[in-house]
Length: 161
Image 1: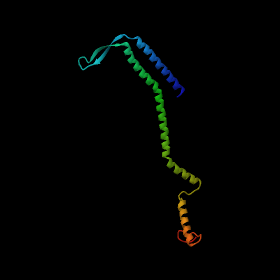
Image 2: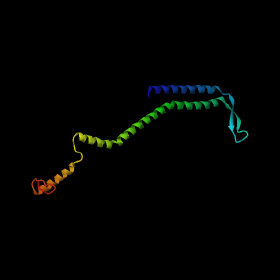
Image 3: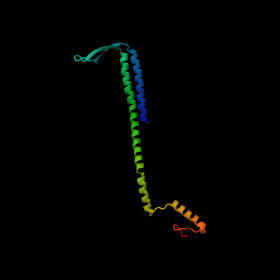
Image 4: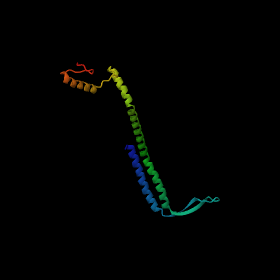
């Protein structure tokens, strides 16, 4: 976490705990009852809103507003960290997409690179010899030649070389 993030988090937590302490003191001192007037909708075409009076303690009313303010404060504290995490995730996704694109085109580029290297080395890539197949053919010819001629090798046509 960066220094700015630590400072922001520290200041936010100090304000949060200070607000909780101040709210607790204020709620304990206000034990009076107050009347609240609320407009409540009703199913009446003549008078769609009805006035309802409630009596409640000031501390209860303040506690509700405190909970609402504390919820907003916690969301505000978390917001920069969530934005940073989302940016980090998006950056990582872009890196992975570039890597996948590079790996997807690798066979095409590999073939082109092989052709370029062969051209630089003046090699003929069209006539490739199969080394193991050639070795097996020569070994068979030697074995067949050992039985009739000592050390002579027969060509594919059957002639002794």
